[in-house]
Length: 178
Image (tube, rainbow, N blue to C red; front, side, top):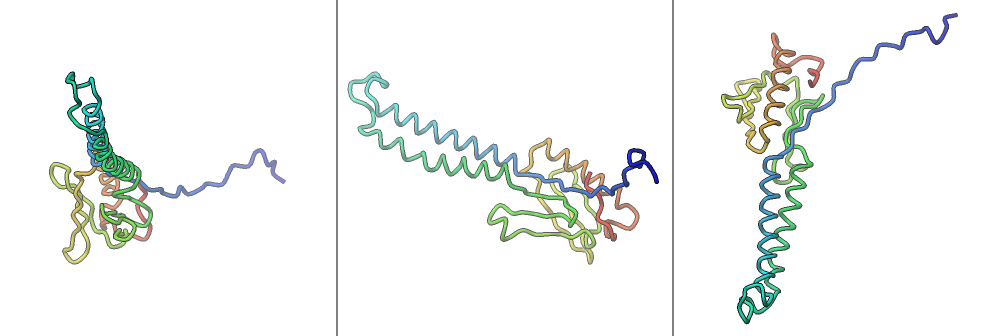
């Protein structure tokens, strides 16, 4: 009988994972707007305090106005966190998953690998084009992605194109995600 220490481990087939791209550029804008409204709230509070304006009476007669921008600042901060954490485009073993801005769990769209003929980036790299059979196509704006994420997306699309060259991307096994 063979020595168990001399046996080689079985070769395991690597299961492709997924690559997720989030709306990181939009998230930054929402964080900036939340910060702006927070500082507006601080400014309104300072205008309501005596001594900050170097006048005898304060400019605002109540500090309650400082509370008004805070819910909007909190809502914008929550939206920024949500956009930074949740996916916009996912290359998975199933296909390309697209999540819209409004109600992503209800309105998501999955384009399965067997039905995708070609993935390509338009000139400038601002639009992902997913070619489907019968002259159909899905155009996905890449404006919500940050510049580094667009570069990674371009590498992923190039890797998928190299893998699927010849007969398009429709094949029995999904292409591995680089």
